[in-house]
Image (tube, rainbow, N blue to C red; front, side, top):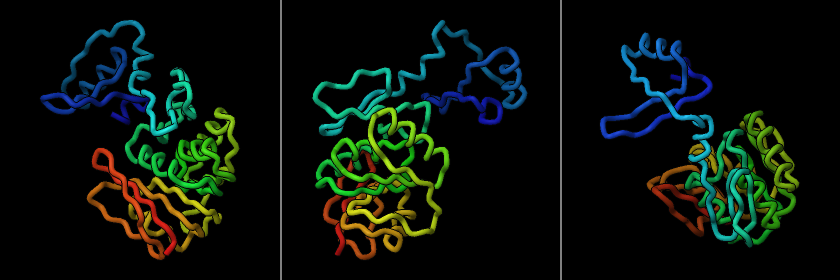
Length: 230
């Protein structure tokens, strides 16, 4: 499907299995028949181009509101506005929510966001008073997305491209919503008093060398941990 429709397609769970659907024309339908040996075509109503917006609903975590630019933030909450067209995460995933929850329990200090993606955590940290905020990622597209989103939210984030194994900038607090394997490799690369990690399932334990885990929060089978320097 990615080769046939690189601009995108829908995936939905149905009682009979997974359904893959693409908005296309007669030529696209012919390609589907050629590759899969069958397809079902249905005319769609006007306005289908905007249907994708319904998948991106705002979330609320403590005093934070995270949502797309066409939604109106709740009054009284700090608003993190993220364009889902830039990908790399919009704040809706449980691991992002868990990191946002833990960040709000920490005293604002210099912060480093490792694997910044779309910049949700960096932007939220800046709004919460963490300063300075440094965001790093190994993907150039993530760097561009974080810079654009930080600018759109009117916050200052120092965004840098990082090599996979090089030492990372020192900060009192590190937040890393990455894989468990990548998180385990962080201690030699960071200099921080507190580390928030996520990106792994509840059944996976995580012990950072040189740190003591002081809190774990859970959501929908996912976990996030707060570690303090031993």
